[in-house]
Length: 235
Ligand SMILES: N[C@@H](CCC(=O)N[C@@H](CS)C(=O)NCC(=O)O)C(=O)O
Image (tube, rainbow, N blue to C red; front, side):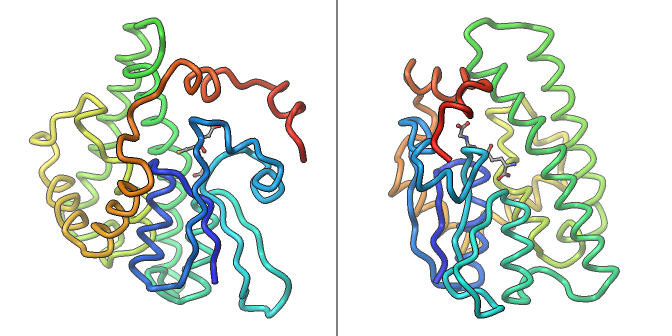
């Protein structure tokens, strides 16, 4: 059984999608990051970066003690290795999948996160920052669009690379016009139609009906962190 420490954000959706796709049994352990639950000592013991998602696998393949893991990309690779599902075993196909997974983790996620921050949350509207991340989002969308021009999914088959990217493609929130990215739009619609993906988002809705509402306290918690936040938190 997997314990999934989760909130209703793009990085959280990656793991519910994977678990729903593969049918691995799991227990959802919501961590309300707007209420500061990511600073609870029990959670920090698993996820020292105070960010969801994280898992504890109580039945790891080596038969040892429960295995804790944070970082969504590492979790997807671990679960893909454990189940052999949606993570190719062939050397070249696996390398292809891993490079796109890292592209998502290092580029798409962080850049689109900054887009959200400066467009939606920053108390001051800074035109340079808004423009900078909208343009970078458009560039990254175009990279994916081009990649998808001659294949159904990022590596051909549906894999964890698609699962990692999909929850981040939110054109309405990111100032993007999907008609400019027809291959990406087709891919997004195909993934949205998958029953497992629909189940994952229904679960999110049941946990937190409106993920966009953030009060002042939540904003201070999420966007006011610095080194003292980490040093002041329990290990
Ligand atoms: N690289 C990390 C990023 C995780 C991340 O940024 N999680 C956000 C929600 S999407 C979070 O937990 N934020 C809590 C906070 O900022 O304190 C991953 O992919 O797991």
